[in-house]
Image 1 (cartoon, rainbow, N blue to C red):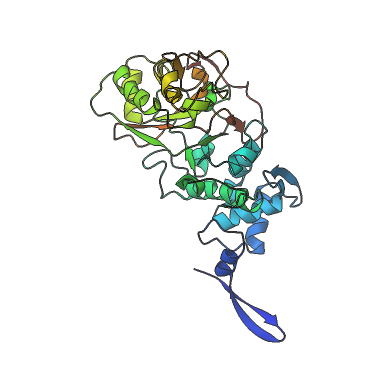
Image 2 (cartoon, one colour):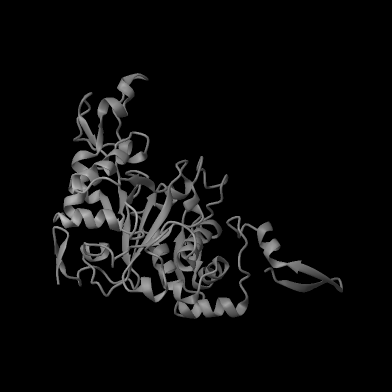
Amino acid sequence: MSQTVDRTRAGEAVPEDLVESYFEQPWSDGLPVVPPTPAKVAAMVEALGGDPGRLECRVPPRLGSLTREVLAINLVMAGCKPAYAPVVRAALLALCDTHFNLNGVQATTHMAAPLLVVNGPIRHEIGMNAGCNVFGSGNRANATIGRAIRLVLLTVGGGTPGDLDKSTLGHPGKYTYCIAENEEASPWAPYHVDRGYGPEQSTVFVIAAEPPHSVTNHVANDPQGILESIVSAMSTYAHNNAVSGGSCAVVIGPEHAATIAAHGWTRNDVRNYLWMNAGNTFQQISFGHRYGKVYNRNLPRWYKREPQARIPIVASSDDIHLFCAGGEAGRFSAFIPGWGHMTAPVLRAIDGTPPGSGPVCVDGTCRL
């Protein structure tokens, strides 16, 4: 429901619909926003630690100043609760890390959008969805956290479509693209624990990515059969990873994960299998030199530029970021291509602490 206030112009009371007013300003993602009343903004600033003028970061490509007050306004407009504020702040700090190259992601003609994956206890504290319909609608935390990030990229970073955002097609994740890992259904250590954080810590992971590409396999009862379906989804030269490397993500559904783990396969086994078997030939990605001699400087120098040489989807199994998420019924997983070597994913603790305090993980299995 929109709110109405009266303003006086030359002594005349003029009704103003705030929601419609914000549509007329560059403050909306195309959907109605929540009017940022002083009380709501103040509560959000308090959740961020107070000090409204404190600069959190500068957001590319416009390099706008993201103060706590400006962040609070965008959080309110997105419909966030104050409890979500630390997650959004951590995600934006990760996105503004130079390794991520937000300037390029915001301005590219590719469809990439930042995907946020949350790990740790905060998932439950703020009621995030890691299960059924994990990439879809219906959960306030997932939806509004992702939306707040997009609003900041628009209002502070200047990523307005047709202006600084030059994406030819975009994708629905440019409204909101935020999930949590289903740690409880996963047979493996949580992603952040596998990367050196403690299970009691909460983290955000960001990667520039396409939409999820569904992988269905309802017949395989062994790891190889399931993973060959994922290999099939990965082995195409239509996405950026195939022609420019970089990083990608794979989300294993709980049913698939249980089948794989029942045979003793670890997370590293899965990533190594996908890396070893997913790929194309150089002849495929160069179109057989049909349009002229192709070298492709985007790929590592050590790759052979010979017709039948194997070109893996990414340079290393470490570049395949593997999560378990989704509902516990349904034999589905997903491949999520990245933007290429022009960006690098970033993992960050919500409280900013570095990794190293967690258990030692060997081959994807943690010794607690």
